[in-house]
Image 1: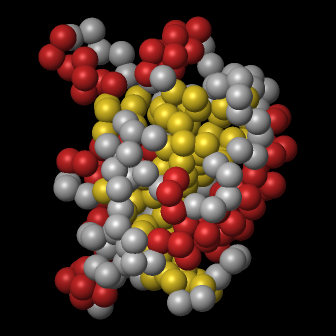
Image 2: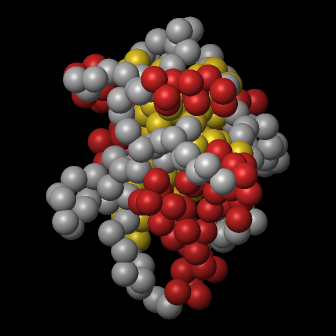
Length: 247
C-alpha cells in the first residue's frame, strides 16, 4: 500500500488518540476491536484502528525505544507521533491521552481532566524577549468537556520533561494557571497548530505532582488508565456528528 492510499483511507476519521505508554493504551484497546496497521515509512510508533459499536478512531502509541528498551515518553516522541498521525488521518483531532500529576489541591487520583486552552510548556526557559511566548507555547485546544457525560474537570494542563516538581517548576505552573502537569500534550498541540490541525487533551490524575519516589504513579497506573479508557470510549460515542469547539 502506498503512502497516498494510506492518506486517503483514514482521512474520514474524526479522532486520533495518542498514547505515550503501552500500559496507558491497553485498557482502551480492550474495549473494542483492534486492527494493526502497517505503514511504509520508518517509525517506532504503533498504529491501530480501534472500533466499537459503529464508531472508530486511529490510535497511535509511541512504541519502545530501540536504544533504551522502554516506552518513548516525552515531548520528542509526542511530536513525532503527532506528525505521523496527521499524515495518516489529516482531518482528525489529535487527542493526547494518558496520565498526569495533579498540582491543584482540588484534584485526587482518578480524576479525569479535559485539558483547557492553551497548552503550555512549564519548563522551557529562554531568556530572550523574542522567544518568551514561543517558550511558553500557548497552543489552542479543542474543548472535549461538552462531549462527555461523566463528571470531569476542565482545567489547564502544562507539559514538561520530568516527573518531579522543583520549586521553579511549581512557580511556573502557578503562573500558567495549570492544575496538572504531564509530558506530551503541548508538543502534540504545537504540531497540530503549526500544520493547521486540531488537538485536545484527555488526562487522568495518577499521582500528586512531586511524587519523588514515583511509587504512587506506578501503583495507580493500571486503575486510572481503566477509568481513562471508559471516558475515551464515551467521547467517541457521544461525538458522532457533533462539531469540534476550541476551548
